Image (cartoon, rainbow, N blue to C red; front, side, top):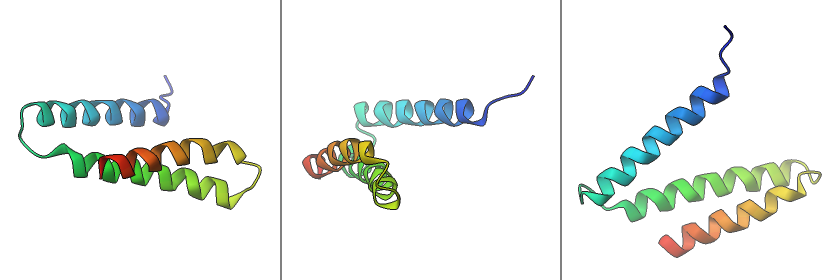
Length: 74
């Protein structure tokens, strides 16, 4: 059976995100800066996709939303 690497990546990301939410709910660490960095990194990935090829105009929408969330949390 051939496994799709993207499925594994999404599964790991969901588990790590859930663990971060759990640790934040238990007041183990301050989650604001962590989420700000994660949203900023994801937003910059969409900005790169938009700048690399103007055919990816749709990437400007999630880039703006994610960078806005980053600014709001920061």
